[in-house]
Length: 152
Image 1 (cartoon, rainbow, N blue to C red):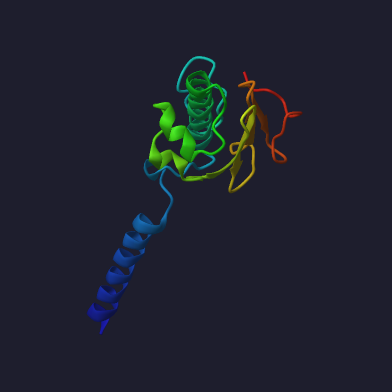
Image 2: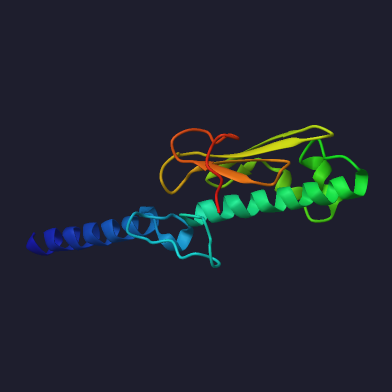
């Protein structure tokens, strides 16, 4: 009887360990915990987390693609799908689901707005906003807009 109880607890401990390995968030899988500190990707990097760095990189690609598209066609793209013709924007990038962020894009022939809204708004997942002037604005309390502070 004692041996079977000991075996039962040994199996239970192994299951608990295995479950914690598969369920517990891990920085190796892109989940940032409060104890993790973000390491800037370049000097002057304004991002506060890996998720923000990815969102800002995406925004820079869209802004660059819009400038290129405007140079080629003498107007801005009116959709993300149209930006695929700029040469620097891929079909995969049209998807508005960008991990921890969701893209919103409104294009007109003479202007555009781009927003990145985090699925969870907090100090390491700010919202971002940009328009045809190329300046990226950020806000950690509400959706960013043209009045939000410009990031450096």
